[in-house]
Every structure is written in structure tokens, then in C-alpha cells.
Image (cartoon, one colour):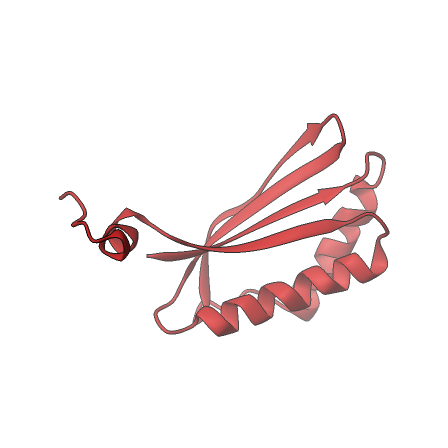
Length: 108
């Protein structure tokens, strides 16, 4: 399974605005299960520097570019509307997909 993991940071005191922007973004760019399947819609916690959240979705076979494009559209919309919002997008392989990349077989 190939995953798309997005991480997000924003300043303390901006969570309500982030929440409202998230709802707008999801209306404009709703989930498309032909591209990704959400595994962890969002986990959020406070850090000493601000708020942090993470999302994880499984990418459907052959849909990595589309998954990245969707994530970029969503995150750019938020970052353009909220000063101090930062994000990262990661493509990750689970154990079964990742072990062959390093020349090993995944355990059964």
C-alpha cells in the first residue's frame, strides 16, 4: 500500500480559522475514493510552537500524481488564506511495498 501523509502547522489561536477553511476546502475538493481512501482523517495536537495535525490516506494503484495534486490544491487554498500555515506532503510505502525497495522480502 502506498500512502500519502500530510503534516500541518499553524499558530496558536488560529484553530477556528483553520477549521472553517478546512470545511471550505473539502467542499471545493471533496474526497475522491477512486484516488485515495482516508485512513486517518486528522489527528491534532498542541505543541510549544503552535498547533499540529496529520492526515493519512491510502493511494489507489496508479493514482499517486492525482493524490499529490489534490493534496496540493487543498493545502495551497488554506495556506493562501492563513498566514503562518505550513505543511509537508509525504509519499510513503507500507512494509509490504517498502521492503522490496531495499532488496528485502516483507515478512508474512
